[in-house]
Image 1: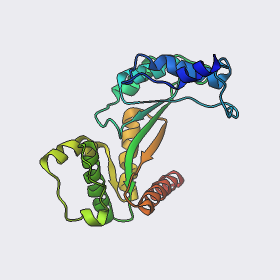
Image 2: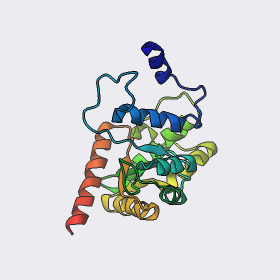
Image 3: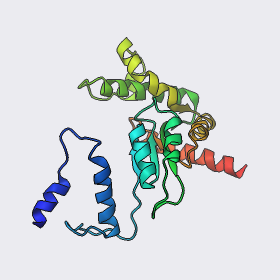
Length: 220
């Protein structure tokens, strides 16, 4: 019986359906808070495990609100999302054992660089690789150095158009201002930045510069 329950817990509808998602979230919460004990989690969670809803649509915003969970809006996945989603979340929010008031995290693309020239190179490289990925191609990602003299096809430019409107590239002050403007627009309590640069050292540097710019702004 336990093996059957385990198989059911690990299975998922094909293709995935949002209709089953609320029940799946409720079951996950049950395993974490101890109200569901079969199948047994191994290893068992150490302490309270916060549950978040990561979403990009009105359905996810309403679900997070109805369940009283924090809502992470993935702007880097759906660049067409607008503040109406976080407003919808707040309007539908019901306090829960985990959360007494609405809490929004905004996840967006941000690359802080030491200078504008490097930022422009990483911006072009990032969007070129995104266009290749979203376009369904099988070509491998290219480095910033290799993409320096490459151009976009008309189709690739259309694919990255919306992403380009919300992504922040530039010097630390420029990126900080752009990200904080998005935070204000969406009324976010927290921000998570995605900086999927080709080189790991560019990713680490982007995070370091962004963090320093926020610390300096707070100090000032």
